Length: 186
Image (tube, rainbow, N blue to C red):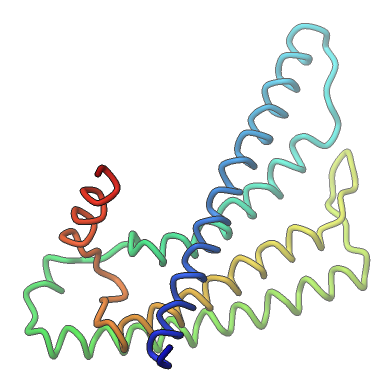
């Protein structure tokens, strides 16, 4: 297999992992909703609260957000001002896409660095949330760092796909999606 084929295969695998993380967020939403519903029902019916549901829900929200971002990049479903971008000549549009990719890699790389440092600091200091129940913060900080790390990796894979396949990192290829849907239906 050529080096381009290996890079493309790697990009596909990272995209699958990113989409798997997005599926995990779906399960976490169900867990969070069940906790909130049971807590609300017990408060209303029996005047009893489940301690820690609010704190856990807040921490789960962070995980939901940061585990979903890589899949958004993989599927090219992030925000894009196509009115302006599509009007540019292809060479200028590609140059701007490369600049944006490099900027995104730099910024997300800095976020990854700082969030892992914060997660490690939180773990070593045994940092806990303030509330009725003390919940360790390092797991949620680690989930944010993990989500951002995967986002950085997915951005690098988007750059590889742009370089090797010419697949724009921010624009969805509607023709390709239609072909895939037709292929899956047969």
